[in-house]
Length: 242
Image: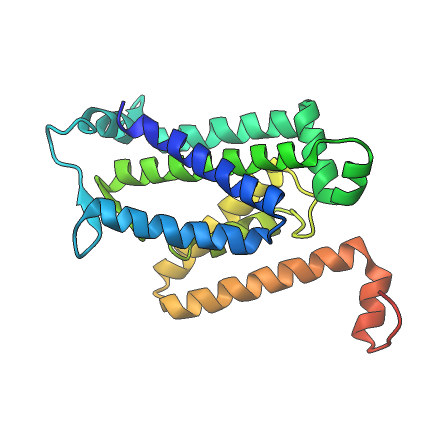
């Protein structure tokens, strides 16, 4: 049961981020960036090693949970893949079939209008950050299960992959637009792209450059699709149209 307490810690940290953002009226990027750096420091302190790697040895309390997560369902499907599928289905149901999901779309589309309409914006934003923190912590558990170790700085740079995947899947960085099905497709496309680059021995630095370009192009295409006339005017160099 040791590992299953980790998502609860992530839930609490995410909720704390949400409270700071909503009550303190601070920029989400700054708060979440500070939380990421701070939690990395906490993880290093917990690891207590120069390499910031904590190995999960046989006989520890976490070993049984780790072995269960590493198992294959019917010898074919890895357990982490089941987590991915189940969470995607739950998220799709919540966003499209529940009032909470509709409120999240409304807040993402226009927070001011949602607030004027009487929605408790702060409460829903805190809930969203809490869920995000819980899922991030769950990913940490699955990482530990796969590699049988915990690494304080594991996942550094993966946020770029996450952004690219959701943007490719049709989610707008401006908020209010996006579907879980598109995000799943974006994850698969980006995963296949990464594998292709690795198989062709493309340098890791070049891969980062390509990922950055993909994000820019995907956002550009989104804006063109959402407001083609405005983008056409911008491309022609005219002013006065926003």
